[in-house]
Length: 320
Image (cartoon, rainbow, N blue to C red; front, side):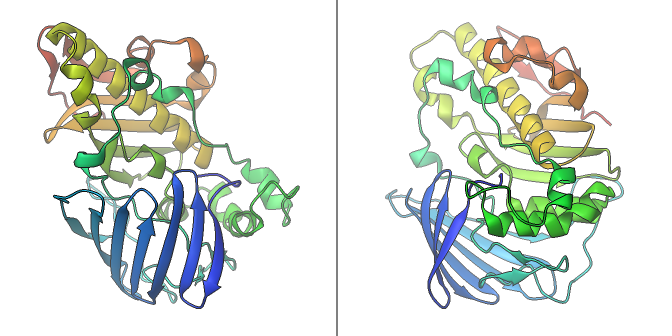
């Protein structure tokens, strides 16, 4: 996410070369069908029904001999709330992946975003223990929506002008706290796409323009190499720091994208919530992220986490 990334070059009609933070990809397709080949070896096929908000995603890694197919049919709704927010079908479908999609905010939506699909566990990068505890130290560039609103043209050439124009047209709705616009922005920008190595099945929802909730499945495959070299207690402590670090990073990225006051994060492992935390913007903004222990920092916020160094995480309930 951010204004300085996701540049796209149209090679021929229907074919685009995309440059992002995680590498380069080539996208081809027509309205309702799109295929993306990433330099990491990931191949994503997306099939949508224009005007319905429904799409099918199939992802596999061409570099893995035994690639796992992951597919899902999603509707643009908040899937885990008692009163979900549902998008109404739009004149121009967001399932139209040919470039560029026209949003109903006047500016073309950049067509080089990729769907947030899980990364193959066979090719998950094995990080050292310090890196596993340091995911929170970086975050996306923060968007000043007021500045974007009053400036139709990007300040200088370091910004992606196409993204700036898109954000400029979204700004009035975002600053007005339009929940539907929040969720559309998340869908189209994919703010957590660089966290796919740490988690999958990211779900977003809210019934309050001052907050956003994010639920995701934590990926413990990134710890498999470290697990073989350390004791059970050391592994459990590392896992706690890893999960907490990812949760903090998610909150930072959501605050960078949206003018909200709270981000509630639910971390799920083996189908059960193990961490549920409510980050408030004001408190999080005061933290020196380069010098903190992620587990000690997370417990400073309202949270549910039941952890024991001998047995690890226990199931907890989601914060309301």
